[in-house]
Image 1 (tube, rainbow, N blue to C red):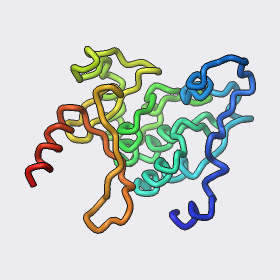
Image 2 (image 1 turned 180 degrees about the vertical axis):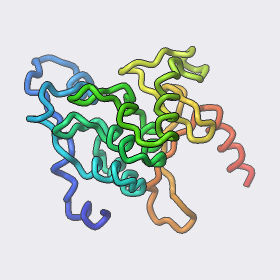
Image 3 (image 1 turned 120 degrees about the horizontal axis):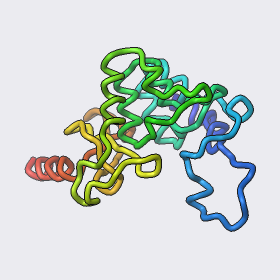
Image 4 (image 1 turned 90 degrees about the vertical axis):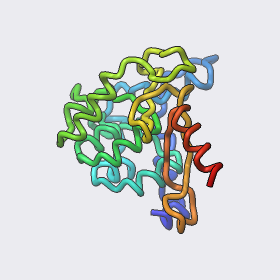
Length: 203
């Protein structure tokens, strides 16, 4: 995958969601809203390398593709996001990658199926259900804001709870002490991040 990326094999899958009905004068962040769904998935959907890696459980490949800005909200011809594929593939590590990066777990595909509908094992179903049933941020910075499709949940891998963007921190780290590139995505809430920073400072 790294070799393919060096030769630009991933570039056709970047920013493929285009809204042909954009109006002049819209704000840039509104134009790039990743949570808007195209009208007809059969015409605009594209099966991406991230879909493939997600379904097949290749979490390290998912890390690499996410770092190269492939979007987990891109849809295939059936309206499935990579989160749908991760749920169908039944690999918790992949699903957690997306939850740490922030995704809408309620998004339905073209057949009105959510990721929970496609989940194939109990641990995956429990993780998605936990995300869906967490209605408010567990942090204190935001004042316990309510989650919706704009205020996305971020999964803290340390305490395994969900936080808003304001109350969490995402970063790329080395997978092991011999890794040459920071490719592993992590997300921690403010509290857990403070504990880790204090621990690392004492080493």
